Picture 1 (cartoon, rainbow, N blue to C red):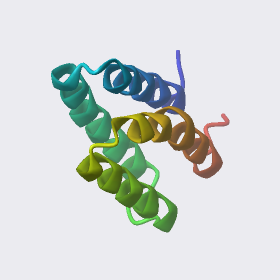
Picture 2 (picture 1 turned 180 degrees about the vertical axis):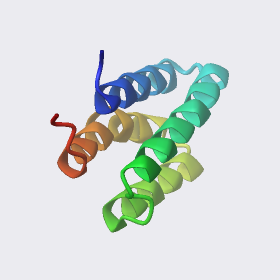
Picture 3 (picture 1 turned 120 degrees about the horizontal axis):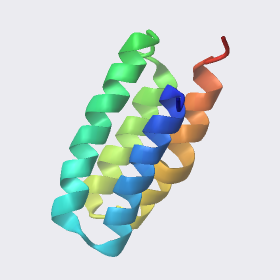
Length: 92
């Protein structure tokens, strides 16, 4: 079974790919599902108010507002999984 972080990373990759390919409708739907899953994961690990994640969310929001889908895709694919791995311990 894939870890929670690996599942979120897989979802982030799907969103990133859709943004990069210009599939706006699909990307938007996947992005909403990703944010819901990410929010649930952060809540489960008591990281909802974490400064690092709040700052990353703000960068993501700013990129989305600017229409910079490629930058947003990079954040989703590379930054988010790395930061999750730093803050969530999934060892047994």
